[in-house]
Length: 275
Image (cartoon, rainbow, N blue to C red; front, side, top):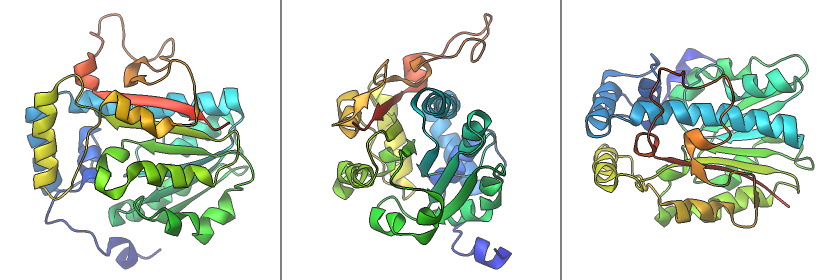
């Protein structure tokens, strides 16, 4: 992977959602234009930093639960974003060292850092595919996917903070359905999705900021997030605000911390198993 190949197509003239998310998490892999846009969002919605952290924490917990309790050994993570350790494969392989993970994203900057996503345990395997969630066929037919994942065995489809970037005009439910169709019984969907349910006026502002920056978004109500899980068996506690999905003892907020509010987190999450 050459630097010229990695750098191609990186547009630094306007903000990008993956780089803005990196800023929310306190990372360093973003540009000034991303910082400015992210700070504009934070002015309208100060909870964005809490939301981003709770989204990552949900991914960690969901991955561990699927590995420990449901025998999952393979993951397809779409909308990977800029690597932030621990990455999904590190979480999974800490539980099951032979875990296999395919990452996919359409941001060339993520490709630049993809080597971070491919430092697997000797027993496991990871790879990265540059692909767009709006085009599931290209992703599903990528030779790299077939080299790493066995689609005859259960796979966890991980869609963290992705689907609100796919508006209804692009058939988000059809996209998720197509991805799940190729996965066998026992597979899982782990999904997180920002919502305006707790503070509609603030999220109208956030929508305007992203859309004005050239990134259409559609933040959805709980009932609309629930549609992504149609036909799946939801794990307890169902579709809940991010920090309330199976919080782990000894992790998260200390006794002196104020727990986040629903409005700060503004993130519906859930995990479902394919019958």
